[in-house]
Image (tube, rainbow, N blue to C red; front, side, top):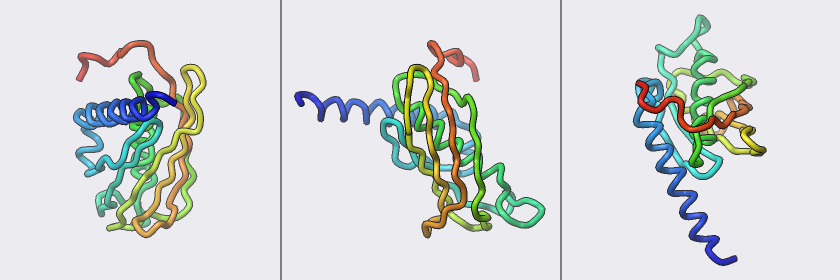
Length: 151
């Protein structure tokens, strides 16, 4: 298949560039210490350490922060192409509590893209591999960039 390696390299470059551009203006991820990991076409990983400020009334990681981490991985994965995508819907299933001091990693994987819609699964794990949550997000591709120049 002529040019397949070059096309894959180009796709990886686009994905990395898009992730860097988005992260540079992602104040939420930056302020929470969420870091960008590996990114490729239709996939991305991010990580975060659970702090005491992120706990709920039971002293465990607030589900909103776990959702946010998964949503960030989803956002970077669905925006790894040369298009602007936003979340249309998302849901999460919490399986284990996130403990203070835990390093969480969220890995997003594209399941399907059809027309302007994408479907992504995200697994949130502790650094020792325990699954904390499973997230599924549906993205919608926008025409142009309606957010350009805003900030």
